[in-house]
Length: 207
Ligand code: GRF
Image (cartoon, rainbow, N blue to C red):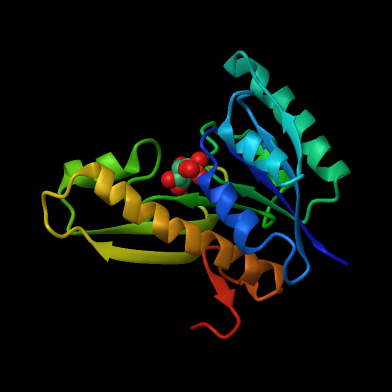
């Protein structure tokens, strides 16, 4: 039996591409569906090019999002999805959707959470003047970028005045390793939420 993964993305989809290249079709992992809130998302083209089914789930108004999220959730369940990966999904999902996929949904965020959640985290980190930043992969909970952390990788912001494009390149290079690694670990059954401490994630062979 394969481990069935769905990816939800709003834009470029370079993290989706990393998953297609590094985990799709390996170790029993299949990316079976890619959904977007934007019909023009490049992520959809990348999915189609890999022969993966796509769906567009738009919500014209903020009030329409809960109903949209229910339709999206049904679409994912119908495809027997084991894990939902948010990879550059730029909207906040309803609490009902988050609860429905509790412990079955992860997000990649380009900062060392809990620092700089929300929008434009790389700019936030540079504006703040931190000396170290990084990438976080975490389970999704209600609350923005606040769920239990699975993997993190840090790097120094040296020299201090590096152009943002250069920092973004380094962040992406890390994301494209860390997210596939997290999906591999989850698919292998090596990642568990600690029932006695909901903030903690235990990883077999880890700490
Ligand atoms: C990534 O930096 C991800 O961490 C953030 O949005 C960006 C999406 O990039 N949430 P891509 O669409 O995967 O290229």
